[in-house]
Length: 427
Image (tube, rainbow, N blue to C red; front, side, top):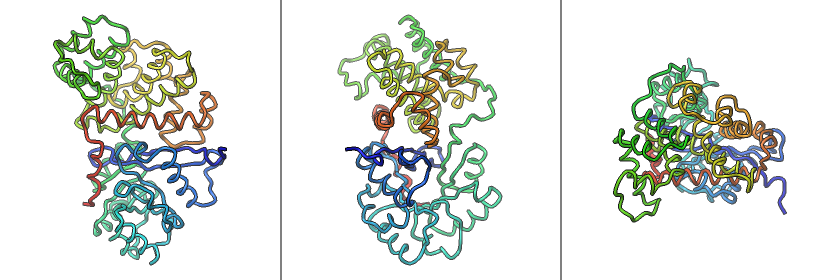
């Protein structure tokens, strides 16, 4: 029989490198039967995230080949439970309240010898800790707590040691640029998903072509018109042929023409590919663009939740609308263009448009739910679950499926899932 403690929220916060590519996630956990973010101990919270992630999710599914950052309190640090975690993929974050005494230093050396990576969480530099600075791999600095003015001196002091520096709570592009210039190696925060001052910049040719194609697919344009859009854009045509010939589609038939490729792929798959390509093809990061990661998981999560709520009454078109809302909800950030302007060019139906512009209706509420989950605002998530008619079990199942689906996109794009291994050796 299931006990209340079996119900929990799991959040993933992306960790980016200097190229703004995702190299890992911090896993954040809260038990659903606790009304406030309070635990008997931090150790209990850390133990639960590990046991539940392993038993209910599986670390591979949650992390998609990236590094997993997990908070560790003293009790857990000293326990054998840690050795259940995937060695070489796990970063153990020593919480700031741990006293860095001889017992902790010795345990850290043991864990390093086993192959774990170690980080100091929310750390404040102090010369007395010089010994552990030679042991850990990463030091996380809360830039808001430290203060932007104090950061240069903190970085200067820590640069004496063979560690990577991670800037935490980076919420604006300006903060990222300052931390990047100071020499931070890793960054945690949602600066990449925040709209900059929208300057209505001109969307490039490839972006315009994809938006035009998306509009055609959304409004049921004739095959001839869709084919012409590809013919006018050689880059799109090349990517279409790559997709149709990919192993993921399992097709052995040789492609004769662009029209043949479009027919083989099918409108639904082509529409989804177009939505994802807006992000994947927009810059040199391609499939490692963190906006693509967020948009893909957000869209897939909304699609699955919509099907759960609507049940058999959910048609493909309605479920596709839920996916589209999730994907399109980040277009204003991608193109630095107001959402109203983008939507005006796409001729979307009223339900989709009101969800994107006002977070209204069923789709708007589900979009809010996905956004609050990304921000690990679990109190808001709990309220929105009730408003959307979604159970916590459905949410957890949908998360796992969305993470799995996102990982499969990497394979389809012929990109390695474990590119995050670059983080292993401190610079």
